Length: 65
Image (tube, rainbow, N blue to C red; front, side):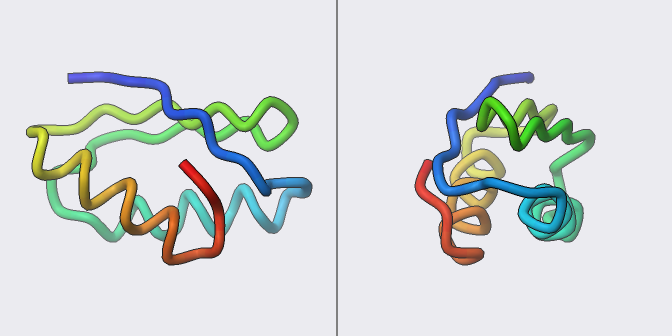
């Protein structure tokens, strides 16, 4: 499955890297693409449970989903 999440609070390359790293650690998250200029985070994942873990990880880095 694939979806694009709207993430607010990202403003630089370091923010992009934080989100990418957080998502890459989640089992079942297969691919991630982050555009910090638009706040678009596109993820490919295995299940709805994985998507919720992705949202939680992004919030854990201090951003809003």
